[in-house]
Length: 136
Image (cartoon, rainbow, N blue to C red; front, side):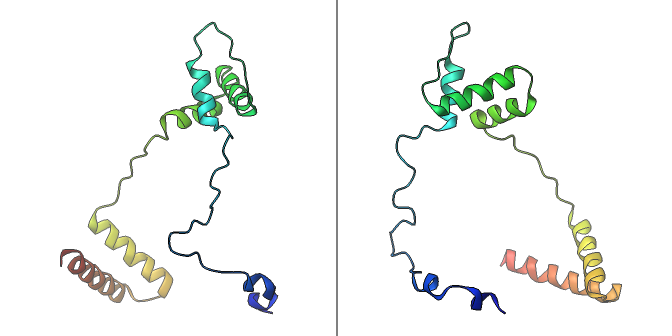
């Protein structure tokens, strides 16, 4: 039995594309629900020695996260850091052109069973076409 046969036809009848300029979530974010990031900012702005009093559930969650971080929970400390400063960008090193070609040749040999000479010729041809598209 195919997946389409299992789908309720009434659910498909209700599907309609959005009109141009119409939002798929017209209500958007519910107003009045404080964000955890905002609660963390409030906690971090509290002067040292003053007690932070949670006014909302978001404040309580953020305070618990903060307390755990201050007790040495590195996961909570990392979470706070990422919410306030953003995630640290991880550098990515790409192999040079020759290494990428060799990797593509090996993958083609393994997945298709082509002889190495034919696989290399196809990869080099594809690289040449790709280079032409990028430059032209």
